[in-house]
Length: 388
Image (cartoon, helix red, strand yellow):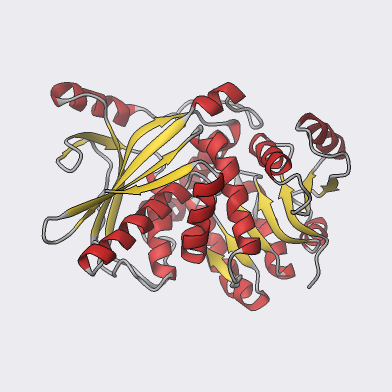
């Protein structure tokens, strides 16, 4: 079916949506991608278009997140919609339903496993029937982690003839802050869990996104510990609750290339050695940036200077039954949540458009687009993947 646009950026007036639109305008402003900006307010869309230097001819579309008819009309115009409008559990359900109904591709930044669990139950079968390719978690959560695991598993299979049954994700370095949208999503998830015990159960279940499959008991990653694999102390990592679920879903969707006995966790490497490292790990474990009611407001986030000064480095350590190890290291050259994420999600959407055969259903980026998206991330998004 012919569509008017290749891409629509929905939420282009929000903090992250604006960065996505700016990246498109700067990197793909040669007309090779037919794209449009969408949101609630035409006036704000015009303002953002002008501020980011997009051409005056850039198409602007309006649709409210709670107007199913408007969302259906919008999604019918595009091959793929990028959604940056969160919290998704509050504002995202009607857009997913519209994309499923119109057979439109969809990529978002969701880090809300309770909502993803519900969307899979409600729409996976219908998406397969309509041909709509729905891709969740197309940003820092969870692409660097999912692709890091995939990279080290490919290396393990090549070297040892089998996948590693145990992988440790270890965040060695990370500089960056979170925006009002991230803060709002975390608060919305916490509020939902407080009201509904079923939500809390989903958050605790590492296999919440693999319907019909439950693997072995998983490492908890909830308390500081000394990790011999990194030669230091490690502490809980706040994004593990979503990343671990997505990695198990990738394994599930791909037919368990990592094995049905695969075990995985994520933790943050604490600075310092010995007692200093232990003290740092314990201090990190007590930190909860979502515990305050005074976080940034939606639409707020780090400055351009802060985004460009940010970075991250994550090790993925494959441990074989023989005791041998392999490590894949993933690095990013910008603030993880925003400077890096805006490039990652755009390249994921373009990969869906150009590099893979779309398959209806609800996917992780890695299960659907592993090799071609990894190549895009290295070429365009400032990510590196190194195996040692």
